[in-house]
Image (cartoon, rainbow, N blue to C red; front, side, top):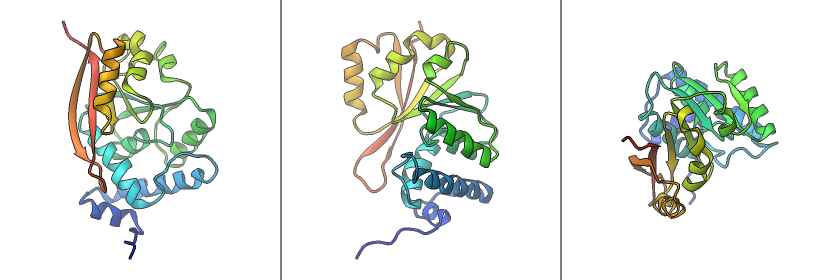
Length: 216
């Protein structure tokens, strides 16, 4: 017999033993409903039920939020459907968060979603590394935008405009680290594993990694 899926966001949060303020739950519910509506026209997410939304998107964003500071100016790199950037903005409305999305259609959807949710979150259409030619942030956050070596290549010329890069990675992060070392792009970069946590429903783990220029 197939286990039934939770039919409300509150029920899915209880499954994961997560407690959030009711106002936050309401706004997260509005967000994922908007995301799913847009997903019927444009591929934005594979997490189209409350359980997968909580176990992947909310859990990842909560884990990431533990390592961001209250005074950070945050840019979500390759925001896609808004994870983690929009979820972080809902969890912590006091934070300064911007979104970067290079696919024009997705950027327009993100703009519509944050407008509907009345979130003060700028949406930049374009590649994050291009934005860094003019803008500065104390933290870049990312999930599922590319392997470590590629991200380090993108941002290598822009470290003066970036405090640190905080990314969510799956169980293959060790192989990605090895490849980045092989390509030489970890030279002069300090990589720390900040946290590891189980991926619900699997035997694998996700990690939060921080990358920044090594201190002399």
